[in-house]
Length: 619
Image (cartoon, rainbow, N blue to C red):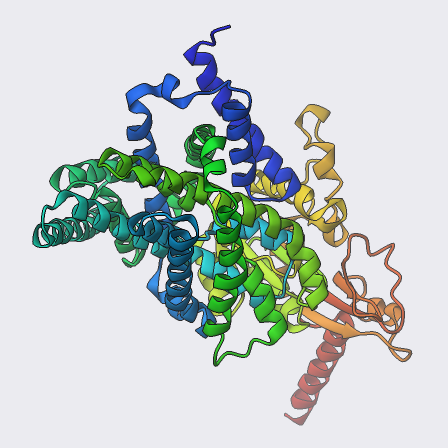
């Protein structure tokens, strides 16, 4: 039975959403399920044939989607961050790229018999890992903060660098194919590089100026930037054949490194695109895979994948680690983690199509080779990384840290108190002034919505397994509570009272959220902020035989609010009800207390009065 085009298009959208949801539930990279869904609907069931659905529009659509992916990736490449993330990360960029690219090229050429041009392009593409596949894996494995930081920033930075390298190799192959002699080929390549670099830099500067000087209304920032970028991409391709991808990559890098350009909101805009456009793209690309093309590669394919995973990656890590403090266990773990992701899949499909158009018949082997590299690395490493981390003893000991929603004065006071006790703390807020103050107080803070996709790639939650909602933003509080209830678990999310317990049932928050409320003896955010404005401060009290919990209550005459309790084994627990609190003599309390205890204030007042009377008597 023939299936209508409308039904096929709707099916792609529904399937992409299901794959994204499934990846979220099992905490694995979404690309694995998207590729599996595309293969199942295409070559396995024969339900989806992209050429029949899209016709001549298929690869123009793919090329625009790839341009969006490369532009978004390049927006994360800030040169200041490369310098600020240690010698290992800096070494991995040049050394890892050269070693992986070289070994991948040699293996593809000599084992599979692929031409040097296609092998070189495969080597360049195999360099890319990416945050979309690294971040879910790190959350599942929970390696030490040092290793998580290295892998996270390698993925973020190598994503645009590897894409740029692949684009340059592709431009070189295309320009060489168009030239009859070496000089003409070199001219075409130089023209492509010049147009891409100049137009990309100019477009990045112009768009950055528009955003920085607010020449465009806020609601048009995201859509305007995306539309302008696609226009520049098309113009670049008209000026120099296939220079558009280089142009948008340079444009993104330029904007990322301009000062006071709000690129974070543009990155968050990618969330909707990732579900609707990019997710659908990978289902479409996977549906075009032919099992016969994979079979044609033979057992040499397994050898190439094994060499990249067992030779190229370890060699890159051990060479890059020279002069660092990493031990052999940490190096071995890093040597195993290098899953390939979205950029590799997208550019391989596009480049293969473009090269086949200009006469490179061997380019057809590029897609199955890259897709099998993605499937092998994501699947094998996702399943084995946690047991390996446990075996090598490089896992984070426990997730006892706190993500605090809010960087307001109350949240900052609590964050500083926890940090003094070496409890991992991360604050998140959308208010820039709060974020700035938190950074000045040397607190780790994330500027943005902690439930966004940008946060899922950028927010470092190593050692963090609890959420404290200390924020006046009711809508964001509910979103964050729902999100992290599924992520951290029902017993690890704590929020303040919202003051809606007496409202009618239809106006009350869902029961699941209500169960998280009642933090800090049921006070609201307004009450906490009021206490802080009255001079209350956070204080640590160590209980003992000489100073019991009852002595503590008597001292402050019930005006102290206990926030956290450390038991004798060093375990920390947020306090929900002081009436149910039963600390022993080895416990430590973190409390919000008045500037002076009532007893101290009375003694001070009596002393001042006595001194005043003495002075009057002398007169």
